[in-house]
Length: 104
Image (cartoon, rainbow, N blue to C red; front, side, top):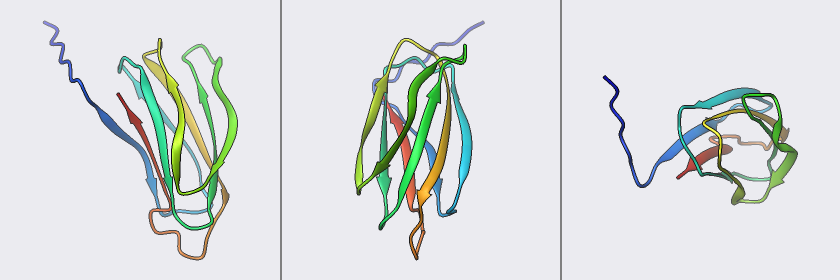
């Protein structure tokens, strides 16, 4: 028996870290999009992100983000993503310096 649950709004926290420097891989599976990736940064920090599909094709080429917060991209048409996040610059106090979310 398969149970299907549909929620109108979903927020996934993909990364929330105080570790800097960092190089981190994570996956999003079995969630139909579209998913909008957003970030929040503390201090003078920045990070790079790359996203791949199941077949290895890049959905987002390695891109660096800085600034307090922003929207990265909206990805649809896939139910799997592999995400790599790498710190580019760290600050003196890195408490929760990066939060990366995916919202639907």
